[in-house]
Length: 419
Image: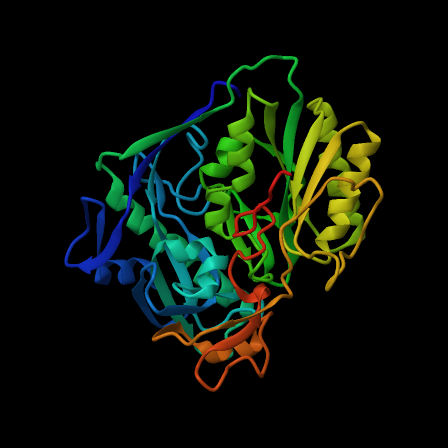
């Protein structure tokens, strides 16, 4: 698979506006709002609208279901293979990328584990989505709709909106091109890969791979380019601070960092996607199989970024223990710092662990001039409580509620220093 070369034609978006037609000129993305609404509508929605939230504006988006970067294959047909478009050419060829903007879905809350994005203030420091020009999808449904139906409708509407917007990039010259290819390297370099945990727990705790619900999957080996090219879609309502949005898969920090070091520090061999099931038998099946794949690839080491917390920590430690027992060095990343919320499982073999932050830390977020969604739903969300909304309109919450604040791939304000 070393001949697979993915070229990302990146168009930098500096601002987003609504207009009578679709265009990109001088970094300004203009969207036909009525056309977008028509394309993304669903019979389950009682109303559907789009707003724009720019970096630095006094705007709070709450509750957030997903964040999606508009991307599309050069032929204009495929953005998310198996959901929107076919499978031909995924992970290679040319993909158009609108960088600097995203579709953010909000509206009636789907599950209690959703989050918020502040476009300014202290909350913005904890979320990379605050630096984007966000096209906010606001969709509400009638009371009584089953949560699974609601989740499907809002997920698919967000993907459709991203696809509609990405089509505007067809025929537009790129500002620059990024190329990703696993070129041949010095065979003496250590062989490494990623055990890419993905939620498969049911009850609105699922991701999708090539359009297939992860809880229908066994571990699979992917070329890292496939991750970057839209095969992974978020379907989770897990804690907002540490879940991976679709944007996080499209811009996987783990994949991109491993690519940077390919041929320099090690030989990046591939990505093993490991479904994270709730039941012990499925955990054993998937973890054992993932490690056997790593052994078959003759890996010397693996990185294992964790999505979520609690239950998935059992999978994390199972894979760590089995890898180390088979001579494969492991580096784990997980959220809690072990003081306020200890990890659910540990093992002496886990001797190289990256702490990506404490999701239980409280922050007070000031009032915003504009709320997209419904701030009162904070009382039902992980990280919020009945006392969260302050008299002045601000909210006192934990980092759990801020989208991506303690992301297991390490995309946040924390940094390390070498002494």
